[in-house]
Image (cartoon, rainbow, N blue to C red; front, side):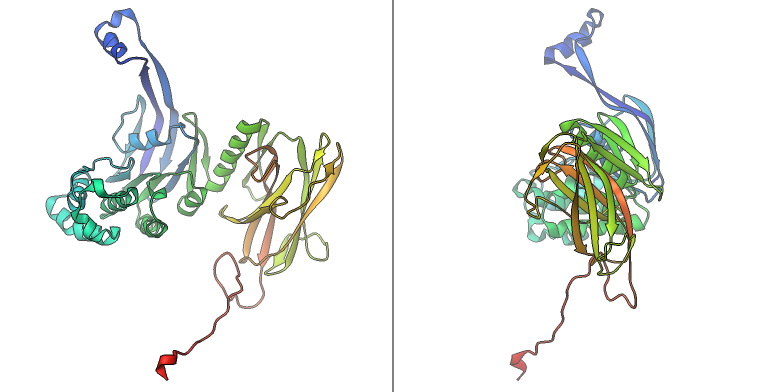
Length: 412
């Protein structure tokens, strides 16, 4: 249970300039259409096995929410087909199926009824909903008195009181306090381990990379990419940059089989990216804590002040570990001559956990490559971090932790 199959799914809405045009079209069909069509989804297809987590990303209006509404059964497709096995729970629209005058108990009961739970089961779940949502006495108050974050707590708790086979979430977890976001993420991970299939719409790349095994990029209703989250997000960022400034997008498979994305106008181009140890010997393996030197060689097609040059280190899952750029580090700009190359050198100790890492580099205007992208090169360099002896920490970073004991003076 939890398998999803989508085949050639399309959704088209009819848009009318005036309400009376709809009536005229219904009652006088012989006089021709009075609407124009907006195609929101175009030939979407994919298959998800039970327990898979799919992040759905894209710009506003790309069709992400419409796709979830179709899979959740609240909207019908115009053409194509889909199959969803098992019980489906969703947080698709804040307030969907919830009455503002009902109190928390009544709304939780209503949500459970909509999910198909029987009366005896619902009553046994209500105390769990109150405990997990941490709403306390607010459960006795009408929903119209709740903040947006409190509504999300109630809706999520009611939707996940019983583990569904398929869970659909549309941006809801981006609302509310950080404590509940962490708590709900832990709940989602537990359900995933038990076999729940997750479809997750969000603009937060870290959430997709943390929760999802695959990502689907929608662009104007079409599936632009389907694959590992980090690769799909790289293409998404390149598309944003390309639309802001222009330039081509290139995708190539690296030596490790992963796809690397490159984009930008190339008015300033990254010629080479290389890694060295402290002795300036070329290196691809560094010991934990060893100083690494990353050299980014750039060349301008026309004379200009040196733009911002930056880099990001990512782990093997595509999670950003550390990134900075010349603007943040206070490098003074200077004239970059046309056709000439300069080396921008970054040096830092690799106080990060053992494993494989990639370096992405970018040359752009101001502080962000999406503001004016000259050259953005994902996975330009791969390196390893190794260690000797016992590893005395866990996680991505080795921080300078200290420990001490302080006796309680009240004990005498």
